[in-house]
Length: 237
Image (tube, rainbow, N blue to C red; front, side, top):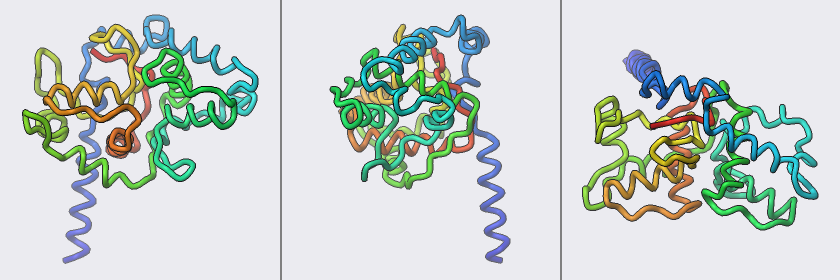
């Protein structure tokens, strides 16, 4: 009986995995076409800036990472434990800046940090998300009701995925394309910016950029998308 129950659980998880859809699949054909064509994808402007920043400075990023093939799959593995703590890709970039380049860290949502993140994320395009660390804390935050509306992330993105909210389709919250160019923002933005938008939307106090809560949430969202292919930098409504 235990073996049969285990097989049923595995089968259920496989069915759930087969039903996963990225935010890309919820978009209109015109928005998908914008993302698919690098000459039309506005996020590629940040990628070009990121490529220039990669070569800039003494030492530069390229001084240590001379072959960009070494960056393949990196974005798909973050957030991850590094230097004794859980950090996302932006924090890892800034750690390199302070420890290796002896430079000031870039501010969250700054053009420089978004550009470098987009350039590195592009190297993982088409690769499966492969985060490994324990996402238990992030799962609890995802399921926690909060704010004046007393809502959780799970209510929207698990229970009502595919429904419409204010004219937009609610996605399943699989962050395959970050950083993304959002047409609503008219600029590139990080996953943490999107998370903060959601928290404000339910009238909750948003966690600070780079806070442990934000990074734990990122890890959980990436763990839910484990095995799905990266399509960063993406375009979203």
